[in-house]
Image (cartoon, rainbow, N blue to C red; front, side, top):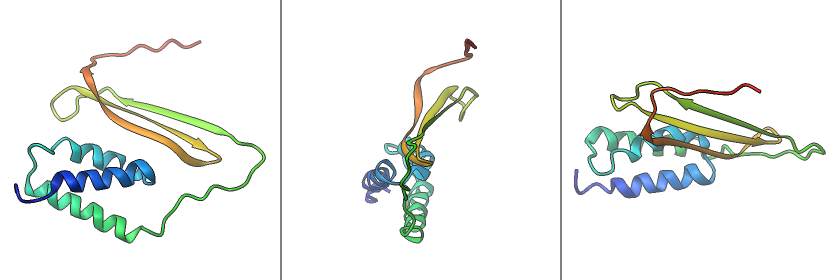
Length: 120
């Protein structure tokens, strides 16, 4: 597996995800965790993602003209046991005029066993 350009594959898919494809956020997050210890199943998964991109290359964001520039934000966090390491994954999505404008999904660097929200 050392002769496979896995890091380059992950980087290319990440570029597409950051610039135009928020639907790839979860899979690129998973792929990035195995850059130093990848297996054949990771290489195959990367190739499947490239085939998905090839099939959906005509899909695009279309922002419509409107008088009301409504900005809506969503955030979520997974506080459950994830893959036996107890580290949470969190993310956000901001939509403007009904289409994604900014997004992020990240695995947290600290372990969290609980959370508390203040309702005001």
